[in-house]
Length: 334
Image 1: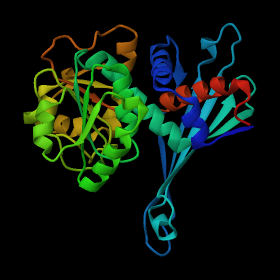
Image 2: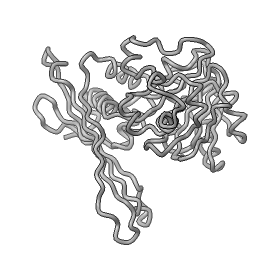
Image 3: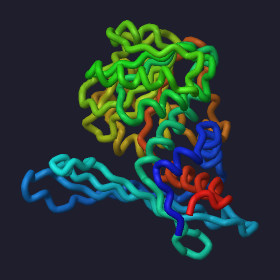
């Protein structure tokens, strides 16, 4: 069984290839079976009483999707949440990914699940932006400066190379400055200006694409700030009581998601205004399967405000793991 470290994954993957692999996965006629995320509460820590959890995200290729006998796959991502890990200098969240053969059931690889999550989350947002962001977009605003932020920035630049300016805003300005400094010397962003936004409202009013990746439970980016034609990429909130934008942003936008049943279960950004009656079922326009299959064109006018709510699907993890497995076929990973 091969082991893929974060270094292996970062070395093997590129944004364009993964975006295309995700496009293929969502567009597949039969595709992937991916049950909902399973969440288990674990015994609390004895010292801190922090709530511990185990999350399981399984997915597998549909058997009838491989009529020619091509290799099929099964994958499971495990995520543990141990809030009391900080006292031992460890991350509160850890993830691993197990890839198995769908033909024999034998384990093929164990992969760094955190790295897979970073790559597939960013590239899923970029896949949506391929259909939803204006093709003449020039300014990207990144709200949040955590581990996901540089991946989101590079992924959006992949599908919108017209972007020439990246602004970064974070509650802690020092973290935004650190990220901006590292990106300024990143060859991937050659020719792109990178700066720290002091005034979030002013930066949002100018942005063509706004990507948010925070853990906020209160709106950060407001609908009144969105200019005509803006694209809003909401990534951070992952429970029904979390949100990164307000009712007005949702009301003004055409709403898209990776999958609407998952959004209804976990997408607080959209479901809070939905439960309040601000929007209704007709507001949910299309998911990524519809976009990639051509059932919906995506952006329909230059002034339309589009909103993509990313929830995160096991299908995306499996698409990333399969791409890694195929790219490592040369024996570069042992």
